[in-house]
Image (cartoon, rainbow, N blue to C red):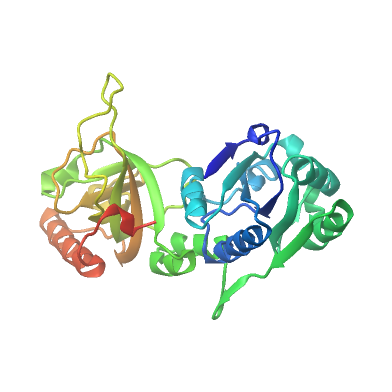
Amino acid sequence: MRMWRGRDEIPADWGRCVAAIGVFDGIHRGHRRLIDAAVEAARARSVPTVLVTFDPHPLAVTRPGTAPARLSTLDQRAALAAAAGVDALLVVEFTEDFARLTPEQFVTGLLVDQLHVGEVIVGENFTFGHRAAGDADTLTRLGERHGFAVRVVGLLDDGAVTVSSTYIRARIAEGDVAAAAAALGRPHRVEGTVVRGFQRGRELGFPTANLDVPAGTAIPADGVYAAWLRLLAPAEAPDGTGGPGVLDPDRIYQAAVSVGTNPTFDGVERTVEAHVLDTAADMYGAHVAVDFVDRLRGMDRFDGVDALIAAMDDDVARTREVLGPPGDASAGG
């Protein structure tokens, strides 16, 4: 799959296509329904499917300080889009100038002149243009004027729940990662580089990988979770050739993951620390992904080290019970 990081990377000779437009943060089950409709339409027309997303989140520009926590990285969005059959991902840089485009300018400049769309797929709550002046009806009228079709896909209702990025963020913030996974169609993922922490876990017999997580990432509520951990990129050696093998890239590992401030030790810094089961690998400097499956307990304060160790023993046992046997890296998203 092609990935264009900016409109200037769209080939000058790009032909007709079908485009799906949205932020697509998380590419959850509702997004997948829209993407699947685009892929189906593109195949019927024998043209490529282009997924159009935006970075940063539009609210970071139109209402600074209000952008929601991020559910997925651009690379993860690209991998999920490719798995869904998308041919190209266009990441539009959302700037103040872009935000000032009228709906007509948005359509003619991007969709008509650059992407040459034959059909556009959007959700029913889609808005675009300066001050969100355009909606799905506006796009339909502009499509009639400029010669492309528009299909509007309804929101996905899952029983009493409407699947949306807002709903998923709320579940993650409450620590209900199982409900978030049900809406996403896979466990919620947090990525980060393993850095050195206080090394208290090692002293207690439970060494942990302390993740340096990018700012703005949606992190679950404080507590202990059963999760899968996988290597995304090994640590680099000083000469840039790549560090020693730390984790098997073809395996996924069971992990008991602690999120919070470590109240037993009067901690103040919120951390994400993964105790990876059945390995003694040195993970410092490695880039890893943690896929949260279920919450085991809250972040408790214990009356001493012995009580904490007993709880951690139980966390490990329950992690094994919740996750079942480990598998290979192709098993996850």
